[in-house]
Length: 226
Image: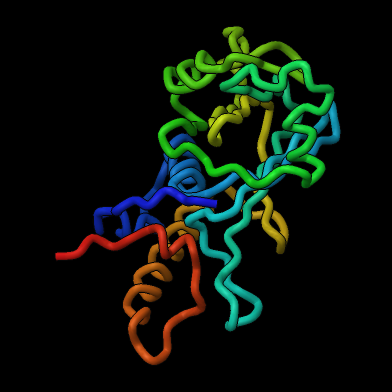
């Protein structure tokens, strides 16, 4: 899988863990941490109560249990009491195939899809409408299609593209999960800040005798050289 390489200004590494952020700002931070170099790996549901999507390669720091391995960066997002769930396709290729791509992703029969860093948002309504408008096929599996105004009035929303494949959901609530259990929304700033601290240490030690275990997320998040 080829991951997009980006050069980040060092201003992005500044700590924000002690800043009081609004829920909207935290959701924007979470979205950026997922989509910069992350990928959509899986989804599941227990309808009509929950739909859950999972991402890897995020800029979120969860300490490794084994120091010989890089930290885990997976996060799952549960949308509680969803009102609208749709899978988006940029192409009509395979539309007559009885095996839908999103079923293959759910069944682990499809490779993870790299998130499109410029088409991923929890908060920007105009960006959501742009993302949705690009879909050639919209498969709505619960509720109303994301083109309806009701979609944008729900408490929580997410729309994104991951290559040719996309997702749009609105819900009453959300829950954030890691392999170790639930994390609170207000923890995201410090978890993201800790990732940037780890990233700086990773590059500081990279060419020393004691480099940290190789981490592709760090490798494609390249520091700006003076």
